[in-house]
Length: 86
Image 1 (tube, rainbow, N blue to C red):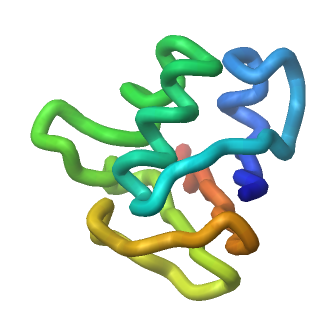
Image 2 (cartoon, rainbow, N blue to C red):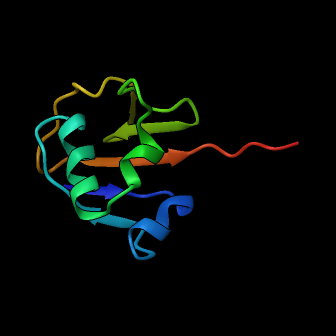
C-alpha cells in the first residue's frame, strides 16, 4: 500500500513523500515503516503506542485514531503533521 509522508518526516524517507509499506493493520504498517526508515515510528507513535496528538492519520480519506484499524494492500494511508506556533 502507499503511505503519504508529511514534509517534516521526509528526512527519514530520503525526501520521498510516498512510500510503499505492508501490513494488515495500521500498527503493522507503522512497524513496517520503522523497518524501512528507522526512527520514523517514534515521530508518529508515542511511548504508549498511541498516535501522537499533532499527527493525523487518514485511511482512504477518513481520519482514524486506532492502530488496530484493518488495512488492505490497495488502501492509501496519509500521515499529516499539524503545524503550530505563535
